Image (cartoon, rainbow, N blue to C red; front, side, top):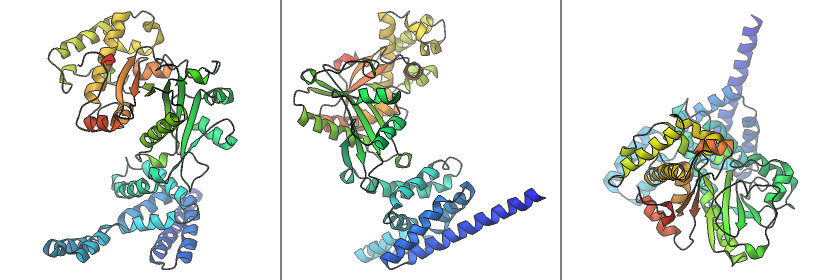
Length: 435
């Protein structure tokens, strides 16, 4: 009985919280004065952070249902515009078709702490979309607004070095998503003169890196990750810098998922390094292929890959059969280090052939590898495949140890981007014969 009373009291508190939030949202949308609106928005932000999951669900329901456009008004104005096609009617239609929640988010964003609050709200929303698809209307509005608010033209790129604030360095360790940083000694090595780290910041979030990229300055394009992240390695002198290799890109803010920042960061960093170090000859990546193992272990119909040349399917099937035989019938053995000690050059060539088919044929499609799609759509060239490039447990599990270099030719990125959008992966001869 007591538990039921407590549950009922909790429900009432949640309902009161949501009702108060709803009332304040309506007040904020109706407020004409800027100062009064900021005071209401500040209170909204404070209460928003205090909502539990159930109350937040109720708030999202309000945003989706009550702050959507009025269908009758939109229909009437659309019919009027279809008849007259004049500017005043179009403007009225545009205003009526915009959800009121967009203006609510804008007013929250104008308040100190509002940008961070909107990002927190979207983080919470993204976790609910699978179970509550009706909330996609809110997601579309937030993505639209955040894409504008976080336009790279508004962002500041800063170099992160050992003299950066300790709080920032801790966040770099925390958010490194590709190659984990093993404590302060590891981070110190990654910030030595032959290593660089650059991050994007937003003026409203000056202490929060949004995304950062790690770069190794090397004599040549690298083929394996272990030497690049070896904290015991000796820094190279500047006169040996010929290649800049982007070996890790990490997003720090889940609330910005889907907002493209990494492509602008890479190009901005490359341009700055080119000015600072004119001896640099190439800008490349050393990238994982996180979808390769899952694709091959799913036993895909290789002859169904789009755009295969005549006879390629037979070569691919033969390569897969060879690897399966070497693995005792189970390709999953390639996710362990032991079998790789037994592979010969022909086995590595078979794995490279399958990886090239995966990257060349699937990258232009939604089924393509996400890292490949990012770099190729960014205008990079598929330059080289590297067997045994990452023999860590993660590298073996994701891609059987394979890594790939993408080359950023700054004079060709726009043309390569355009060709990728037309379904073509620009590649070098080093990738091998096209499949």
